Length: 311
Image 1 (spheres, helix red, strand yellow):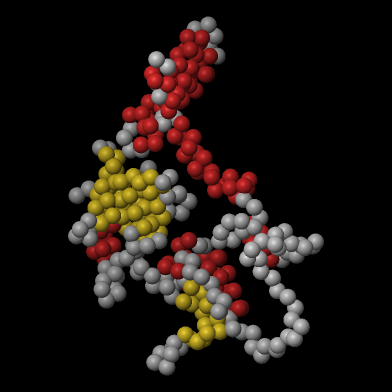
Image 2 (cartoon, rainbow, N blue to C red):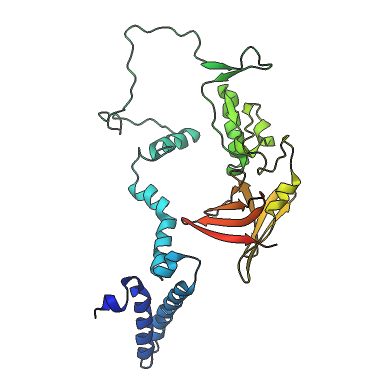
């Protein structure tokens, strides 16, 4: 019988940690400094045994200890790609070259680069502008489109260049001010996103497009009014297992979740999906057949952890 038949390879890390712990403890009888290695290996062994016994995550159960390495690299994957692998002209929605251009202009730093371009001008889809041999005079360079026909009570002359939807909940007050001031200076419109209109949107007087979107947390009656009963349905205690609970509560017109003794505000992306600032993953509220909230789903690292609402 081979070693791989006796112990599956996915358990090698756990078995190795246990073996190192035992050897280090035996060696510590002769030299106490081996206790340092025994403590480190023992801690890794304890983590591996806990991974093996828990039932929440299949990856941890099947690959004790090793799965934590995978989660670690998943966490730093965006940084690795951004700083080590990504080219200057790759990635969406904006490349590093485009971001650098914005940073330089925002700081009034010289943004022009000599000696041609860093792009491959022979690639399919490359675009450029040639000088015209017979230029045509354009009387008005302020390109606009009229929104609203003859039956519209208040038609609007909309610029073809506008600021796309970005919710106030995902931006700072200064960012909203900067966007709206740019809209005012450029003569175009500023879409509010689903975060509604804040006082910062109105400081510089730029045109606004109010995106009603999914409504306030999706808590609206059929005639568009705020529905306190739907809002209250999000609140309550959610249980993962015995002794493992989370509480969602309202404070005024804001929604919070209590996690490890800390209060974290929930910001809506849709009527059922929320995010927390500085925390990876999303919070999803699942409804039953009666349209009542029955569970809270903590979605992160490509896994869903379901917390059922306590009655």
